[in-house]
Picture 1 (cartoon, rainbow, N blue to C red):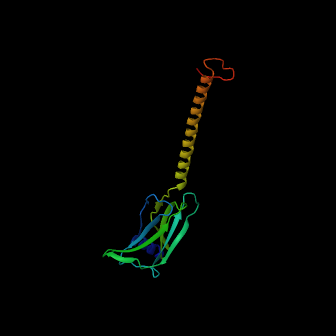
Picture 2 (cartoon, rainbow, N blue to C red):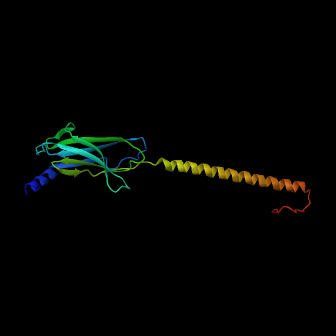
Picture 3 (tube, rainbow, N blue to C red):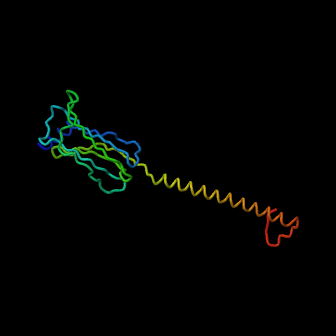
Length: 178
């Protein structure tokens, strides 16, 4: 029963806020920065070990999330924001690659309990789409140029045949459209 009461007190005195909730559209090589704030009542009892923060990513095609970073037991980012609130801010930064899309979560481990942030949805622009678009545009341009050249050659051949026949309408080897 004491554990239940301490859990209720702990969860009501701590709050995890994760920012931003949705990131801007990122490209491979961009720097992503996330923030996880642990807000608490300055008078509340804290665990002797403090708290540790874990960051993990739930990818869109993966069955289980990957732990990508652990901050350990750190108190260096903690300060009293006001008389009624203490804040510990934890940052996570990463250079994005094309496989880093997904939802990133921070989880705060304190007194054996995990409190989760709401998550940050990260979309990574796929460069292969723009490469495909440009190659399709190139192929379309080349096909149009080949068609135009073919039509010019056909028109030239029709003109040459009419000129060489000198008005003779015997087209024994050619079929022409009048």
